[in-house]
Length: 372
Image (tube, rainbow, N blue to C red; front, side):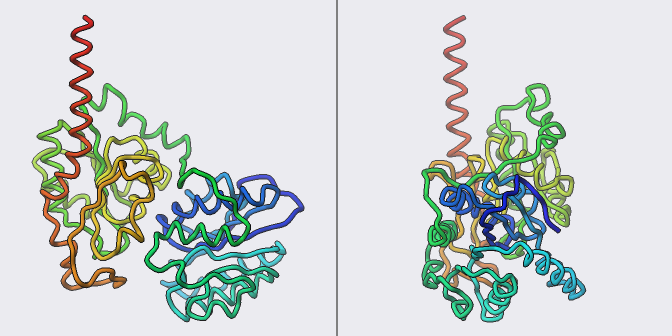
């Protein structure tokens, strides 16, 4: 599958490979813009994870997006023929340059990436020299660029090596206008009837990154009680039970949107709320890209590597020290890192944002009364 998102020219074509998750695709927006700054006349294509296409298709730096069924392929080898046809079509694009933006964690992953580069036939192949990938590259960056550094910074190093030009802007994201039409009522004065709208994102692609529904429910009820908040529960397909677990444990009634939102809808809603409380996940990076104040709950990962890529005043990290961090396991029997986080820890960070909003609101009301 491919998606045309801009005009085509018979000029140099560059392919960026990023078959990673939603959050990593958001983080890549900065690198893609750098690449466009350095190659204003080139046709830039992006090979992205299928689930990230609604975000990737809105990147202004990209002319064309190709969908790679990485998750589908992991579940069933029947998608191999689909992948072969995709690579054959892409080979016909005659790319002058191909670059890989994301880290390669294993030797098998490096071999597959290198083989893809060779099959595409580009003369210039750029990436980091890790786990043997360097054998397939014509221009290599050291493996260290992805070690103990934020992923977004490492990606920009690759883009700069490929001729990208820096600017002073951060990551970016946008959504379809249809999402505004569909969900705009949530933020109208008549429907909200409250001072603060808080979104909770309790899901995530790894179970050991998810804070418990009991804890989310406890924080949500306190925000409603203390700040008159309207609470919206977020969640993608398959996360309905997680959100329902929070709703059933709450004293107050939230707005449960789990399972009802497309990716564009999710981006729009996150952009409009006053606060996002979230696990370490794709929606966390969406919140950072939209400039939404957020409280991020971290378990096994290192926030200096995977944390929100936004201004420090826009986010708070809630984390407990453990000896086993960072951890790349998909499953953990103990999950000590995230179980140590208490609802009070998260509530206090939320209060830092909502307390400021409440103070500003009261000051505004006082000024209005004096004026009258």
